[in-house]
Length: 367
Image (tube, one colour):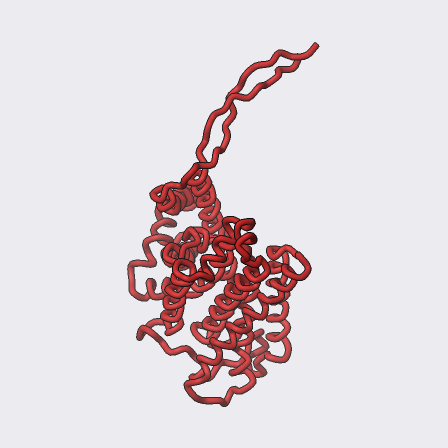
């Protein structure tokens, strides 16, 4: 015999007609609070003192100028890469390979001091930054070619190319670019003085590239909010059919988005080797390209929001280092914090765009 039918209420997400601006602004704050609460519970389960961890991670970076200057140093590459990625993300071009483009930027920039270690002149470090940006854009162009010509998924292609870039870095540092006087460490020669980006703030490691990053952040805002090209990219992401009807070409948008993202990531990689590192090392592949994805989304893909989220992520980086020393926190816990922050933000944004409704649904009980 067939079972009886009954009515039950099931939760359903219904898209809002218009997302509230106030709710959108609250979403990152709620996400940060939710991530902190979740990780506090995790620290308790790990047997760590949650108060000591939170103090070290979120307060110590602001207690001294030396610590805060390191926050600014970390925020620079995160901000620069995230601004480039956000332009593509808003056009629905998902460049997940910024880490590889960052590495290629570092490699291209390092070619000058590695091949010409005796060169002098104030032209060297600007040329390194430019060459690094070109290197990142060229690496991103491989993804653009595969996406436009062969219809390959840009997420997979860009991500796999990051692994190729890491192996290319290993090859150079273990082979032709290895410092013969480096005690067998996988690193290049130390760069000459003129190959280093000038210091911006005396007594710190913050350099002129931070000003370049801020200037490019302003340029990103103007490009996306005030230029016709930026408008076309946004329309292509929000309404692809309407963009096609208006004559906006999808292939052009893919190329431009990926080249901008690669240019920004490559420039950040060049600034890293010509700034705090002072040579090409394996440690240049430190995950900035992946963390910048979190920064871009946490900032709502808006240039101003990304500035704030980059500072927040930099605080987590520096504070996480402090917590590893003072609170015996493993590095994996710091990465979990970063990942949970993105997850919490995506959940918060879902409720900005959708509302939860309980709808009736027919349900047949078993006979």
